[in-house]
Length: 140
Image (cartoon, rainbow, N blue to C red):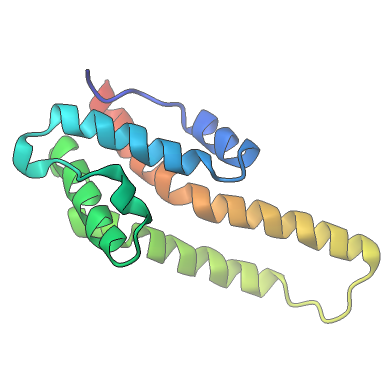
């Protein structure tokens, strides 16, 4: 088994359709693929630790470290680890700048809700799209 090539558009659309629940599956399946490819010292631990507070930080670090090994150093461990934070801050800042209206009509509220949903799906999708783009380079 090797790292599977996944379409970035497909990953994004699955995130939209499943209200970002696809990410849980994505982390599980890529963890499994990386554990097959990596040596024993670079394996990602048991997946249920992903859901336990505090331990999930360590689990995510190990995931990023395994991803760095799989991509042969093309994706830095610490850059991968902090990518969701950096992306969240940038997208949140841009969203905050665009959502500054004080009074909204009903049509604007509906539009604002749709825009908020789109921004939040994009916000949650960008890190795994970033990771998948590096994994796609390895899968070729």
